Amino acid sequence: MKKFLLPLLFLFLFIFESIVIQFWPGGSFESRILAPRFLFAALAFLTIYVGKKQGIIYAAIFGLLFDVVYVEVIGIYLFLYPFICYLITKLMQVINTNIIVAFLVSMLAIALLEVGVYELNFLIHVTSMSFIDFVNLRLYPTLILNAIFLVVAAYPFKRWFEKHAEVLKEE
Image (cartoon, rainbow, N blue to C red; front, side):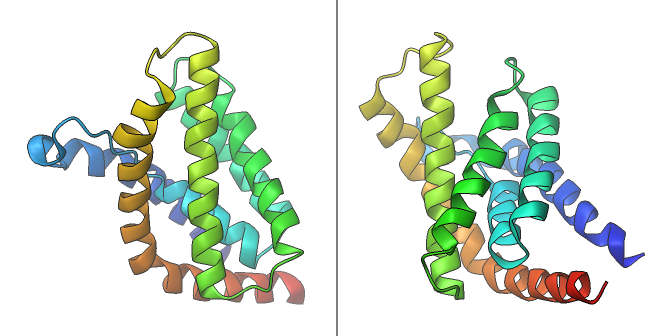
């Protein structure tokens, strides 16, 4: 039963992201665009505390799922989720792991994801928003929303993924 809890957590976060946006008060941020990246924040914590293999596997699975469900162009998230998780593993080889570092690395990963998605959409002419507008209207609000989420969820993620890593070592 316990082996299904981790995929269920990620599935819950996948669904919770869309629920947050649907029920968020529309006029509260004027023309700002909020993109909850709760699933990706959890994937970043999984990569930091459990390891590269599981992080990249879950990132690829949920990147594909995200592309199939939400995006018109298949492959953007399928490529970016695992790639950024791979970059996280390389960064964590240089930096000591603690919850503040994990928080900052997750925020950096979310920023890289947002910029990567923007640049790929700009490249294939899905968006015509300038980079300055993107930073002001989407990147900053997205980072603030996800920072608030991570302040609440960072410690439970850390504990859960450390326990999961211990269970994997015992097997």
